[in-house]
Length: 364
Image (cartoon, rainbow, N blue to C red):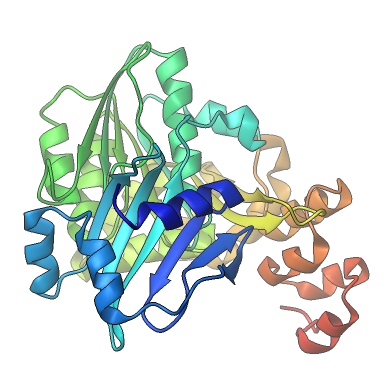
């Protein structure tokens, strides 16, 4: 058994989401959003490098020696599956192990709005799940893929870096390809996928202009494209896509978004009232004629007002979704206010008096 498995086993026993290993500090566990050290000595550079290199392939060791970060999946001897990032920093080597549950989650288990199931019924176009790192985007997408896998008869091609949840084929054929292992890049993976008779293409991250362009082409040519972006709202997501592509393609990109962008889901993870878990809270944009016109006329700043008035279509703005979840006693108000834009609306719910003094409650 690799020595690093002892830390991973402890993390699993504690129910953590991530295990952090860095030089000069003890191993740390991410517990319900908070980072907590375990009772262990500070790790030296030599010690930690030995732990990590025990689980690397020869090729991975070579890439690390060349100064590259590593992204890969790892299955410990105890059976736990992890998404791993290995990197170097000023004090030496470091690594983060994100636990990937063995069972693919169900949308109902995640308690997300029912409209996410409707997004799975689309036959073409683009649906984006966005949010900052660690907000559960991959988990939501995995649940959507599983829903498709159980309810439709499709060819699903998933491009991930690295592969996280493993999807056995049910009613669908699910082909999972890993960037760096099976394909050179996300863009190359999308290009190849379009020649493999896909119905659905999952793009793990729209991280560059080429990938975005290829994903747009796939969505325009009769495929359903699911993807993620590290953006924190529907407006920022749309603006990011427009800004990512060359200026001469600006009008073409706006035309694509107005016609083929079906929905944008932005999520955050907020602590539950008992502090023992976290729950996803979602902002949801469903593209319609009014939003399409705002995109083509460079008035994306007016989209939030459409989200507020589009409740019947399944839309919701983040602040209202947070307030609704607080009222339903599903999330902790003191944690929720960190994600609110108009913090003044949340002041009456706050129980931590020190927070009232430190947060800007004047309005966003």
